[in-house]
Amino acid sequence: ENAARLTSAAVAPATPVSTLAEDVHAGLLSRPRSLPPKYFYDDRGSELFEAICRTREYYPSRTEAALLAAHGREIIEYARCDHMLELGSGSSRKTRHLLDACDALGHACSYWPFDVSAQMMLDAGAALVHDYEWLSVHALIGDYTGGLDNLPLPSSGRRLIVFLGGTLGNFEPGPAQQMLEQIASLMRDDDQLLLGVDRVKDSATLEAAYDDAEGITAEFNRNVLRVLNRELGADFPVDSYRHRAVFDREHNRIEMRLGAQKAHRVTLPTLDTAIDMDAGEEIVTEFSHKFTPGSLAAMLQAAGLEVNRHFEADGGAYSLVLAGR
Ligand code: AVJ
Image (tube, rainbow, N blue to C red; front, side, top):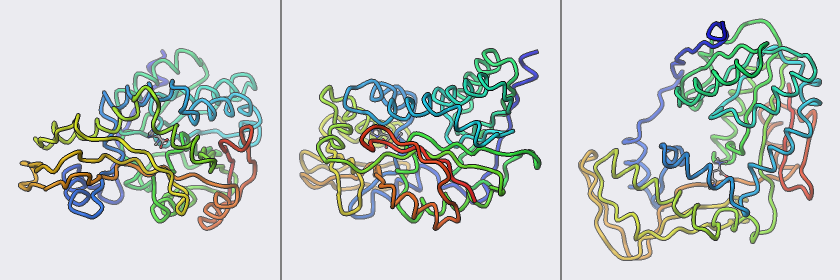
């Protein structure tokens, strides 16, 4: 009977999503060399990210979860959603705070997780339909960066689009704008976006959050080179790369970088090319943008959305906003 309340469907990207090989070729041959952060998350990378969330220094995940727990009911009462679409749902661990609020309010809605990892979504979905007997889960398998045009969402009913984890921060301003515009184009007047973003704060706190004393973030960062070695047959000397996290206050972003300790050549057989790393040369592996209430409102407004509710953690450490047309 639970199985009837869990379905899945593949979502074809509306615009072609580049392959790992294409992304790596473009990124490593540009200057400074760079890699897209989405390739962090193989099984080991996902485990390392979960471990990062348990470090003392990395506050964003637990801070966002506390906001969801504290304000879940207000969010659901405001949105009164019939359908909840989550972009990059992962294990849906934090979404449970919203489903608990639905439960407490006797408000039934259906849940549409949208993620590239089918197995993680189906495992999470099976647990969710067991834990919430009113819930139906429609897992959407795909890459939301390929666009939101082909989503098999019902045409009727109010939607709450959930985009948590500060993941919007990984996008540079242009692509972030495009992502919000895609979300806005999906929304109708009585739909809401629930967006979680990390906030600008002192460099020491921010840099520590991306360079924990145990070195788990360093391992997470170096792991992307292991992904390349495995997927492209490359020969990065992974352990010799030095992790660095720097807060760039001009762009309000944490930059994670991997620095070559000594000059060496890396062959990339699948790309039929090789790169020569200079001693000390760095590969930029992630931007994590931080926002102020002003920059957040401006970005949403540029996408045609306005902030309806703004929940912020103590000291303005993190923001959760409900935004609509
Ligand atoms: C999952 C992308 C939100 O940018 O804070 C954590 C990933 N990188 N530690 C972030 C991350 C280094 C995280 N996001």
